[in-house]
Each structure stands twice: as structure tokens, then as C-alpha cells.
Length: 156
Image (cartoon, rainbow, N blue to C red; front, top):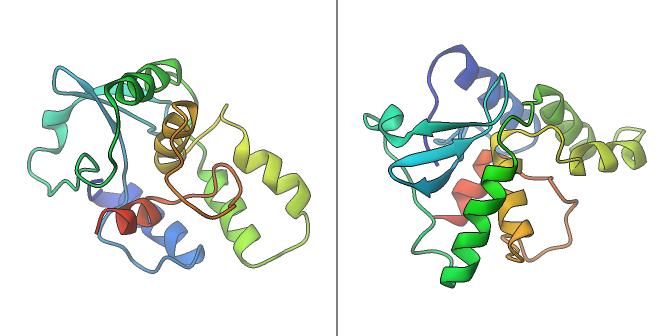
């Protein structure tokens, strides 16, 4: 987890606020895939980026929070590579907020939010863990119904 500055960070903070998360300290999530590289969902599509991109910002890691086997770690990294190029979707924030406010159309929204062919950063992270057989959230939430703020709360 890392803080995002500028206009994109503000948009994400607004999206999280609409989803009931308030204004969190972290607006972005990524998967460390080795060689000081991360895979992250970004506007323009999921991509591999040097970790050094975030060197001036506080980073919150999950490595101590979730006990994973080496096979699970490898499966998470493998899943992240499979999502390279997947388009980013600001509409997912709208869909998450619509579900939160229980507006009509939840049946269609569930499928939209769960669709891994478009993702926000937190959905990418959650989906990679799911693909590896690791559930980050014990409740029975919709697949993909996760914001960066929710992931950050898991790491407190």
C-alpha cells in the first residue's frame, strides 16, 4: 500500500469516501513480483513498474500480516503477471459506491465488479490472492468488492 498524490490520488480518495472508507492514508495497492518490481493497476492498464517509483513515500507491506507458503507467494506473483495489460476502471469505484448505497441494479453490478477484465489496484491485488487460493477477507463479500483503504485496514 502506498499514498498517491496529485489529481489521481484525489479522485481515488473521493471514490473511497463515496464507498464509506473515509479519507484513508493509502490510495494504491500493488504486488511485489521480485527484482524490485511491482505489478499495479494504473490508468492505461496494469503494468510492471520499478518499486523505486514509490521510494519517497511510506509503504505498508503485507508480508508480516498474512502467513503464506512459498507456493502461495509464487502463485500470487504468477497471477499478477497474467493481469498485465488489464484496463483500469474508474467505473469500478462508481459500481462499488452504488452497491454501498444499495441503489437499483445490484445484480448487474455484482458481475461488473467481479469481472477481472477491468480492475482498480485493490481489485488486482485481491484477485491475485484469490487466484492463489488465499482469501484476504473472511466475510462473504462480492468478488472484487475491495478498495485500497480496505486493504490498508487489513495491514494495521
